[in-house]
Image 1 (cartoon, rainbow, N blue to C red):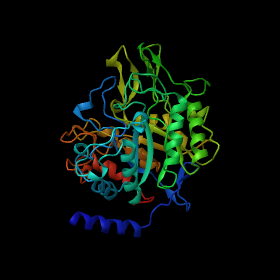
Image 2: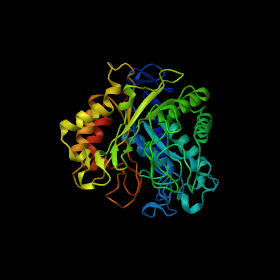
Image 3: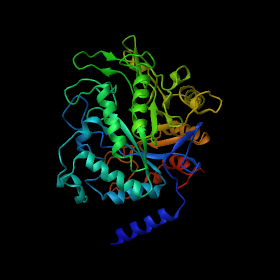
Image 4: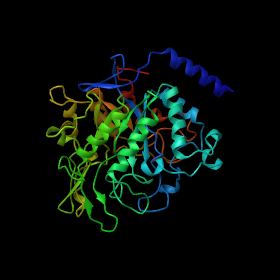
Length: 417
């Protein structure tokens, strides 16, 4: 009873408080709501619907089986998890999914859903419907993210590097991928708090089914592997169905050069060839950054690899600006908002602290958008990047050293919840 009273009171507060009004649009490097008020995405990723299989295996990562549903429903009430997200100050959930999940017809079992008995007997996409409804009813925006093709843990040199491909689990073409996005844009068209399509997660070399040679993405070559072309076609198809959505596009996360040398273009290619959509003021670019993200790497010489956690503050700020920050500069001809769609670390050790300190300082100074990875990914493990307690009824990241840096972003002046 107490939990229900708290939820009612909290719902009243949410309705009474000033909130952002969808749809969301872009204005230069800013996002604005329907009233023209500035808006910053202060988000968290809710992992699970993208799947939990180990790449190239029918086994599950760390023994966890999400059954292609957001993690935690087996432990805690959905409304309690949503309340924790809102109370912590997040205004958006980036909700990853796999294409395989969208077509999964297996219905949820009682033992998978814990206290959420009302979700028993639903397919994964129907469970996602319920989660989206609960989030948006509480005033939390949802950004859908196509995380992978198959229901596998991301990301590595695997079969999910590109938005299409053949494999033993779930194959699709570019046309199939676009069709799924158009279906989702129609499915949630009547829910204005579903604000957009994060088209594809960490575009990178695809490992071919039978030959372990990389299939590299490119930006602008007008062929099958052209991510610029595919993203533009998908974005326009989505906007034709649902013109209110934001279209969020990552750059190319990685490419393999000379078989072993890696390059990390990110958004640098936007300088020469920006995305141009049929409907203006709907494009957002995206970047991911972790302490373990490579600055320089050669697969044949692993000891020579350099990570963001390894470099100086000065060099980090230089790379933040070079790889993606310039896109949001008002002086850039095709300036647009940039979303830091993933960043995070565990509370163990402090080797990642200088990196997190610098990244959050940069994002806060530029009023940029962010989504922490992740809400929770493994219970009882301090090495998790998650930010909830094991009961999943409270976000407790503010009790460890990471909290002061995340709080810096959540407390930025624009649109505090």
